[in-house]
Image 1 (cartoon, one colour):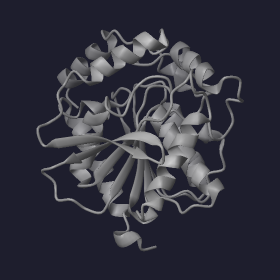
Image 2 (image 1 turned 60 degrees about the vertical axis):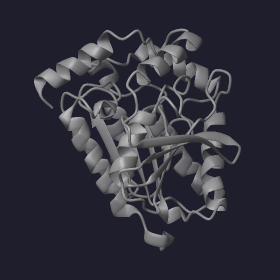
Image 3 (image 1 turned 180 degrees about the horizontal axis):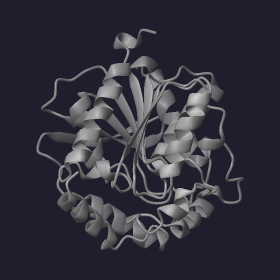
Image 4 (image 1 turned 180 degrees about the vertical axis):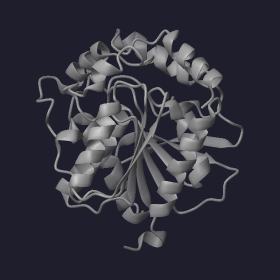
Length: 302
């Protein structure tokens, strides 16, 4: 990542009108306007769909050679803002690189729908794919920020339900610990241009609605991770959630889960969303695609 690219991204984040801990109605509008400001590439096609009663957006890149792979994606926004449509840009970058059909889930948001509504929606969407005859081995679960935490919670819920696990899971800057206990909450506070502890505390309270923040389905860092599929974890070096990624990787390794951790010095939270502007973001997504495609099992073979 060149210095000029990093400065441009940091300035964009620092000067944005988004306050993650602000009024949720206003911030939803601001967030969607920010992510929707850049038009989707001409080769990208989207359509609304439904997965087990849960709204979703299907994203395809026409320029790629279609495969049987399905990426089940969960957007970020601290469980309170964001949408599948607003995240279509980042999702399309993954769809193009993997040649997969991507399905971005519009799970219910807090505070109107607190925990475990989002987890219930994620499991319903996954179950719907299986009911349609999509082999678990051809599904890759992916998510960013809170969506990364939700992707991990889905894996735990799949395990609890006795369903087959997907081929892999990729989480970008995942929020895995709603207790905000990571050391980088403090040590990266001045460096992070996107997130603050105050904002995350506000949104965690909305999402939990009194539930224990150490509940595994809310904070997967505190879960027993044994039996999960291969994980790819990516995080930026200047984000306060860096320790959420580092500790998750350590716990996964101790649980004998195949795990790949990639950290990117100087990169901010979910820098992959700036792939059209930042060389290292594009390179990170190339590695995401290689990981996903490397674990997809043709025809769902075990």
